[in-house]
Amino acid sequence: MKAWPDTAQGRFVPSRSLHRGPALRPEDVFGPAPTPAAPPAVDPPAAEPSAATAAEARVAAPAAPSLASSAAVAAAAAAMAPQPLSPRERTAVLARIQSLIDFWGITPEELAAEPEPSAAPPVPKVQAVRYRHPKTGDTWDGQGPHPEWLRHALLKEGYRVDELKPVNEPPATT
Image (cartoon, rainbow, N blue to C red; front, side, top):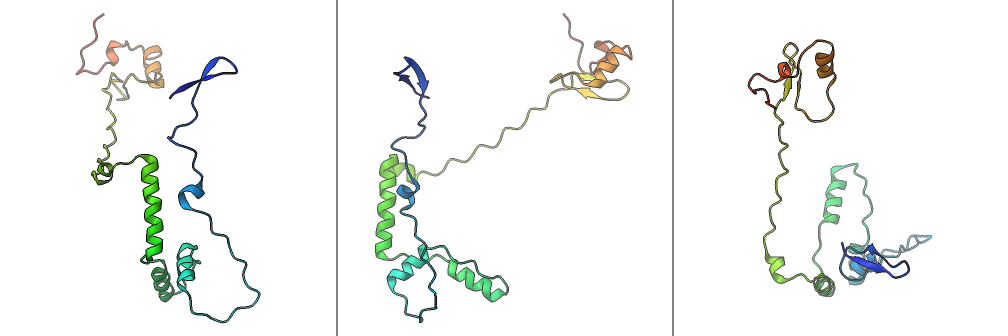
């Protein structure tokens, strides 16, 4: 993280900006938000949809259909299917993509490169058993606070630490 001098106090403070370039607003990335139209007081007569209203209808959020029948589900799926873009919409989308590529400095090689496979999460290392109770079989790997069974075995049952070490592990010499 870069540090910039705080001129008022004469000390260095960490930079709060973690991205390159000016701050982006949602309007800069996604365009202006659609303004909701007020519902008409009475239903207007059905008119033939024009190309402009069809494009606006694709941009507007679809109404939630009633899923009462399979016909309603099929109609909802058909309404949500991607429609081909008009030449004007395609030009606008391509211009937006090009401006974002230029802004973030993405190269054609980065776009064509295969994505790197994500590394598998590391397998937790199983700790070897360092102490085992000879009668109950309770174990402790030596990590964290001493378990209650270990305290009880050492203080009340009279075991020594060497007696609680597993048989396959030789006692440590000091």
